Image 1 (cartoon, rainbow, N blue to C red):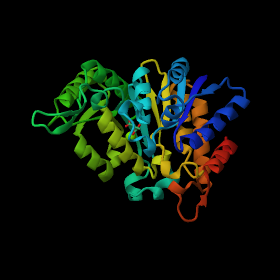
Image 2 (cartoon, rainbow, N blue to C red; image 1 turned 120 degrees about the vertical axis):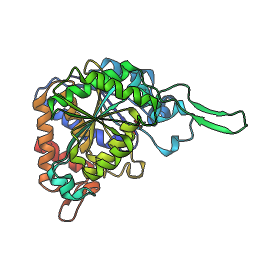
Image 3 (cartoon, helix red, strand yellow; image 1 turned 90 degrees about the vertical axis):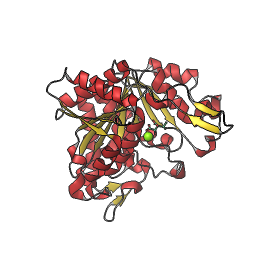
Amino acid sequence: MKIAVLPGDGIGQEIVKEAVRVMEAFRSEGYPIEFEFASIGGKAFDEAGDPLPDSTLKLARDAQAILLGAVGGVQYDSLPRPKRPEQGLLRLRKELALFANLRPALLYPELVSASTLKPEIVANLDIMIVRELTGDIYFGQPRGIRVNPAGEREGFNTMVYSEPEVRRVAHTAFKIAMKRKCKLCSVDKMNVLETTELWRETMIEVSKEYPEVSLTHMYVDNAAMQLVRNPKQFDVIVTGNMFGDILSDEASMLTGSIGMLPSASLDAQGKGLYEPIHGSAPDIAGKNIANPLATILSLAMMMRYTFAEERLAGRIEHAVRQVLGKGLRTSDIFESGATLVSTSQMGDAVVAAL
Ligand code: IPM
Ligand code: MG
């Protein structure tokens, strides 16, 4: 198992360190895990003037899987766009064709009261969001800021999806739905946007190959509302890059904390980039208080999706459940009566439970 480790910025360094300890624990049991570190994001810009240096891209290409922390920081916000940390991550996704982003929103029973929603609304929640990751308005050309004929500055971006791009992520979503409850909801805005009209037509066409799956459609504004009204109506959601970015942050809060949610970004061969869905949280960076569980759970997804090591994935998830069951909580999921632990203490506990 050849893994590239890209901790990135802010809390990325601290949380990845704890996931690496889990890899080391497996390695000491004899699993053939090899990993190598490289810089990405603001850190890579500071060191090499580029948020995705060639050496990092090469390491990522040569690896079978990539574990990433987070990128970004306010000190980089005034850089020219191609130099910003986020561009390092976006380029990495694009260069490696990691088009299918899986973002599970799973509520651990121990965290029911950490959600801001009523327990009966979120108990046993288990949703899988499949977000297209290499197209849409994130990458569409032309884009920029220009002066229009009236002499005013205007910003513009292009929302665009080709049929093959929609089709391939549709297949991913239908296959995942087949392994779950055979219920897929495609989210679009086809009442307004042609791009998503094509999206819906393509979803319907692909659905013919999966007669067992019941496909429904929902406008994105309604989906945002339904996610907090009655989230358990969903099983698998498939949507475009930008809608998926927004809805997955929303869905994460149903589960108590964005600090709990892992993700996998896969190419057509199952190679993957695994990262927590949260950001670099500069406000708490370096304080040893960030929640490392989303990163540790991302490693579980790596074991499952890239290496087909279901047993190792299950052991990680079980260990996380055990430490939560013992009442250990980082500050983001803390509630009275629980034991407040630091980032590294949470890592200690997971490794011990393994
Ligand atoms: C995410 C993040 C990224 C995105 C940023 C950091 C570029 O919000 O992974 O959801 O918008 O895709
Ligand atoms: Mg996001």
